[in-house]
Image (cartoon, rainbow, N blue to C red; front, side, top):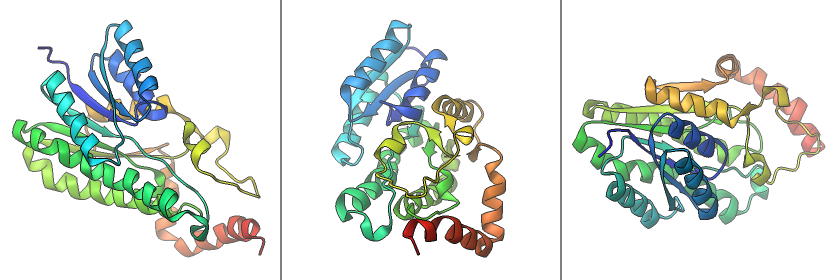
Length: 266
């Protein structure tokens, strides 16, 4: 059997997951690709295999525990090991809290963005612990540090992922398992097409500050090659995180004046 590392990537049918799959495949990693849209997964897997790589597409709804266990089982059946788990699947519904749908917008976000990360990790841990080797990479967001209006549930989910990542790292390090949190800002993916955001002011992240999915994918590869506790993208957003932590009152007033009042027409 090949000694090339095995990576599970959730949310692999588009965006950061898709870009990461292509990049890892180009470096010789073997892949288990998970997402709900099988046709897109199959197309990506075929592309990787035509280029000499190895990829297994597995239809997976990460909000379903049985499908999570199936993903882990078929990956082990095919490759015999799991070296890296990239918890990348996620989505956001952005609106005032009182206008979010309790089931489709709130519960669904928590299931996919938080519970799926926890359950996917729990499903691979026994295997990694037994081998005393492995790496869990959780794709979070700058919303893990800075919570903004209309992101209430999404930010809550990403704060939870950051807490989970930190706690997990301290739990499993003794077993030789690495844990990394990746915290990107705005990325040019399909994310914005599904948020349901309808902003009257048109305020959003300027195009010049938006990253390509490939930029984040390179950070994921870098984390695997040189494990770190966290990666914030772009790097200069560390200053925004620091300002939010040191001067929360000032940030509150700026956001209220420039965004909340105009959007709510107060």
